[in-house]
Image 1: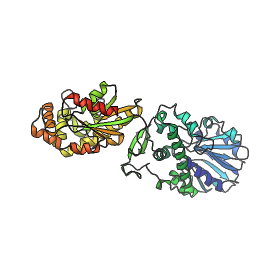
Image 2: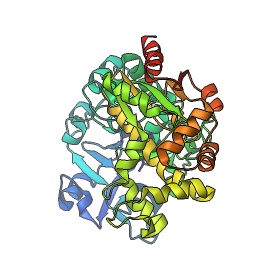
Image 3: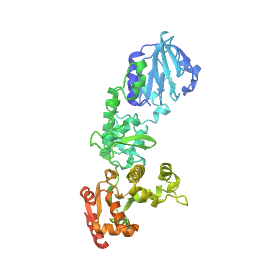
Image 4: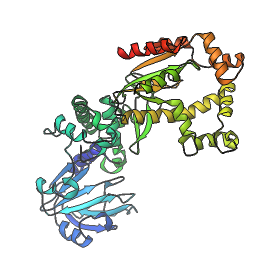
Length: 470
């Protein structure tokens, strides 16, 4: 879809090419594009009128004539072509203006989503009263648009900032591509709840919006390449994009791999490290297998803290209605189901611990889904502190969600003994399962705090409480 910079580029180009030209005839091949006027009245109003000026607001083009204004919204695929009168008509060219009896000015729209409105006025204030325009917010570069005004709008929105910035009644002119760029420049995760942002955050968003749009306009836009054949314009801003359409490429700031998720139904690109979700302080809980992470999380829950447990999420999503159920069956067929039609966890465990390729395959399936669920739950949480328990927190990249990390540690011999008793396995099997994970030492080195769970429960709780007091 052409966004504000693309529409502005079209405006600037048409300003040079059609101003001063008179409409001598109009041919209409698809009249549903006309929004507030019949085909007959459309012709009667505009034939004989001369283009005096090109104007724009948001993604709307204003063709200012002698006494009328033609408003055009290009929607998904709308574009204009300047051709010779005798050039063959394309099947997607729905409105054709004949200018000075020698130029064919054609509106082309593959999907027929674009709309045209005719108003009997050329005054901007009167034009802006048209219902579709009256509900629009201010443009980012409006000198009267302050961060305080934008903050007042956003603090009432209980939705992700991605959706709020796409809402043209809040800020006019930002589309999907530019919202991704604005959020990245502002170091704000697109899945952050809009009402969690403070005044400084909103100020960064407004400043970044002005910067991004100005650069995009100067570069001729991003999707404007579709206009090249007619108007002689080539958009180059795609060469300057920092995150949009950069999935699996390194972040230009920190090198972390750019992620793509669907936020508010739109493909969204961001750096999970540079753009942490604005919300509660997130404390990661991790540790090697059988070190006692559940002991820590159980205590924290009893103290009234909110805990997100990755294992619990996996168990829930493996149920027949969960996100993982069908995906696991699709990959591994019905052989992983028990007699009741549920995922057989013992069979999955054998696959994980005895087949490295299968383990990587399962993890690659599970981790992104759990990551997204955790991310969204963190964004919507009203808590000041939220604990995120993930056994493979470092290995699966969940550490980027955390402000600090606690590692639950256990002496090696105690760990082996507990795993044998808990899972009813041999010492050899226990050691094998421990060895396939990141070592306890490495996890401890990467963590903010270490909780030694080798002794009685009271000592573990004492350590937790000391950290909480800090």
